[in-house]
Length: 631
Image (cartoon, rainbow, N blue to C red; front, side):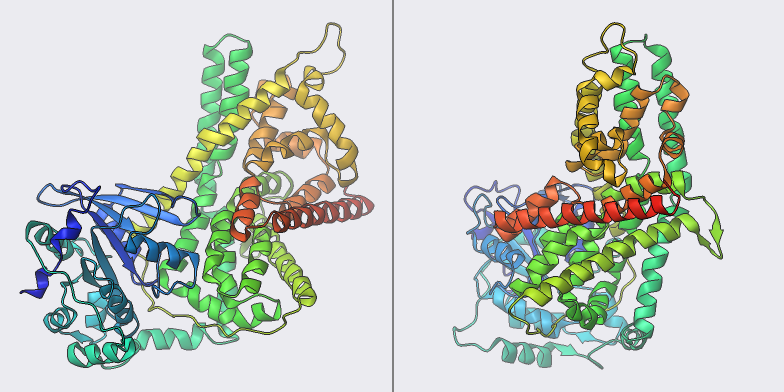
């Protein structure tokens, strides 16, 4: 029988699956281009969620073939083996075997392999084939293999594997057409199941046999990869290049985003003015103008900065640079009690600590994994950016220092402070732990590649939607709740002070100043800290709402930055900046620590040490600043 159509019909009509909508699962090693292929197949017709019971990202999309038939396409977590060494791999293994609760087994497996690295990827193909599931192989990055002079006999490979093998180029338009055509043929005809391996088969020997029969490779690595690695993995030049990349990333957050942020800010101010004119004065006017519009606008204005930060992280990930940075920093991180594998989770934490903590599952050593989880919240996540931007723009002049923007330099310093603090904390944990052995770092270095604009745009679109849903959900809800607490009850008859002092939130804020006065926080800041526990971005919208209700001048209420620059001292601003370096990002971060460690005790320890560091560092900063005349 023709191996090109050797897929079992029985799998395509599995129980519980509508025969007209087969479930296709993309599976493969990390760095094989699987997600790029998923984007090629599904475009914007995809959704991101978590698997039931675990915080492992689950992507599902819809493919409409030229025939009009629909397919549900799953992007499974990357795995090197079905002998799971991490939670990601365990989810992939269980779902493939049909053992995962609440998830039917896929009707067809599409094993995506890197055509330039078949020596590694074919082993996983053989493991999957041994499961006896309907499957085919997508030989991805076929164009890159040809450029390197790698000749692959596709007919011989599919004959030996006993399953279809199709070439794909996930980063080119039409690069998945052959795969879609094969899917169509697989559904239309009855087929045989692919054969497995004998129980005693040597996978490595079988891979060597397949390579000798079907693959001709002039050299094991690409010349361009070797040339770049000579520089980027150099202990001195590579570290300097890494610092330059990180520095440029944080400079760009300010330099590139300013025009977009200014446009969003002007748009929300105009909207607030128009709504204020249309509605009569009263509670509804105040709710919409001072609560909803002022609160949401004060957060959405920072979306450009957040997306620029994400764009850099996604580009570094897609280019193949991140694993090399992990390798480069392994020795330094080991000296601090971490591992080179900690680098990618910690870098992810700059975007958000939650996925950063979740990605520590790739760290196999429990000791290194726990240390990474506990220091990940010290990385400056994107939710802190709105607070940093507000305070920096209010208290740091927008001037040049040589070629660089002073505000960008201050932002870079805040990020460095978080990194240095994480190193200090991990050193303390290393000194206290009993097991002081070191573990070698084994890491695959993928080929360098230019990030495809489509994949970057899809990634940015996903993150923008997540951010805007937070604004439209929890942030907006908390802003409205805070407006209510700030507005009611009203001031009693004959009251001399502002009405907000008599509100529920005003009373709570004034009571909290007894604790936070030593660090320079006023009652407005104290109020903003409470909803900020749900989401850091809410701090800015909360301050906007507080000040909008605290002043009588409508124009002044729209300009939060001038209000705090006039009403706060520099010592208070510095103290608040330092507070956000250390304080836990949000309740979600703490909940993720609990879920990933399975321990309330570890979560409580993380909470206590982070808040303790925040208070102590803010206290020292404020008192020193006051002593130097900045109070």
